[in-house]
Image (tube, rainbow, N blue to C red; front, side):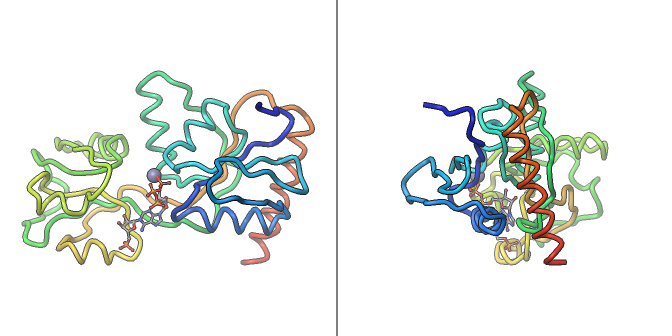
Length: 225
Ligand code: PRT
Ligand code: ZN
């Protein structure tokens, strides 16, 4: 049973955003008893329930109003927003805070041996990516006639496998690109983790709790500066 009086927060169950999100919740005084297998974790000291899911599901859960808050990377958030907008689905949300973890960039990278002389070199080419909406928006802005090829994994091996001419993928240190004989050429999006809230009516006690948690988040972030 869904208890509407409790604040529902979606977090990535495991992966690159998990530790940062859980550490922040701990730092603002949300005590949780996590059992590894379970989708839901209840706070032991506040009316807060945690939904532990794949990061891909978090934007939709917030935009559909299934959860109140979510921790998500801006890359995934913006991609899902564009996808849902194109499909005429709810795609509204509010950003409460840009956080200090999950930093990365979405970049176009080409094989070392490719003669690259700027974006125009990509005309007529196929680019493998998990972020086709962000990439196609960039192509439109840059007036480039290239095709985004959707791949959910192993994007960096696509050129070698003959599936695409270049790639557009997330980069942090650049080691993965280098290991695959690829060179980063264009940064198309810079991303960090954000805390987002659903649109629409919020019962007052819930909004008060959100405001209180947000004040604490600001405190934690300022203390780190
Ligand atoms: O299972 P689930 O679907 O929840 O997780 P996931 O596998 O889809 O996501 P995950 O945990 O890998 O990433 C979650 C979010 O972390 C991303 O959407 C980004 O917002 C953020 N993030 C930050 C990154 C990176 N840094 C990053 N480096 N996501 C992915 N990478 C990849 C990169 O593409 C490369 O393949 O990590 C690899 C190492 O990067 P380099 O450049 O250091 O070699
Ligand atoms: Zn994912």
